Image 1 (cartoon, one colour):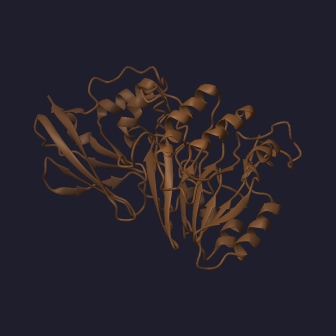
Image 2 (cartoon, one colour):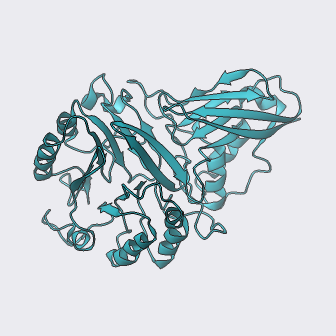
Image 3 (cartoon, helix red, strand yellow):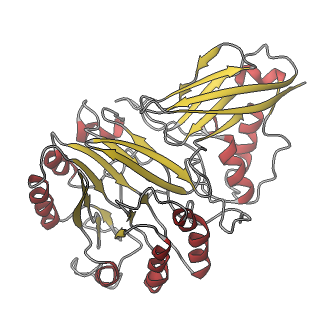
Length: 419
């Protein structure tokens, strides 16, 4: 079980975490043997909250391990040696490895403070840790899958042209030829990047071959920093910048094969997507209020589209763990099944497509009206243009999303065509 960015800022947010993700974990036993790994940003700069946040793990039905993030720093330690002293005192070593079944889990500490480029911090690992990683991997039998956990992603879609963990090439060289899956948090969103994926901002590091193995960005426990409306269950909606709700990721591992699955906070894992209608009227509303998150007036009916707008309207599917190799298929009113198109191609000339036409209206409605992240791009949105000849009245779209492991998820959206 993987959790990213619990990131409690005060006692109220500790309660949000308890009522949300940790209450969910208290009702689960499927992770009991392997335990939970929390991928950094345990608190939000106030290290006095470490004990209260750590005590939440008493609700877990299995062991818990932690990594440090950029909000877990001792900011008064400027020598590059003692920036995680408080973390070590409360949680143990900042980087380490352990075995669980045939999985070898490597927990990296990849926040460098102070940053060598003059920033308050950078993403990277020290020469000493790199030497340790090389020796650690060399001791692992070839028939083991390596689960590489860190706080900051090695590479990512959202910040594809500006961010990577250095020294990236050396890390990939150490892992060459191994069965690896990389996991991280930090960015408060979900990304499922598969072997061979490529973007324009990566070519100087990867050439034309693309990613050497799967990279997963784990949705945050805190979602969009506990923003949004407070639900009756006692935690915020907190929809993240890619439209993904807060939650957890679980790896099911058998021998060297793994399957990832997402569980939204408060859900049993069956909800894997959001369906919406992206029309010109919606896009005008989005552009008008995108800088007024939390104070926008709600549109009258998000699932209605004027007949004259049908030729410029898409049915959108935000498949939260969708990736290269996933498919999304749609049937309108029980008719022919048509395959939707992913908005991001993940090829060498691809840069993130940004703007209202590449957004999930369901996420935008929650964020702009109630607060949360600004959703302006995502790697896991599919869309299908609605037929221009749809009659005025109510219609039904049945959507089946299939992930890279062949698992199918089906949901239905009822929408209206108006005059």
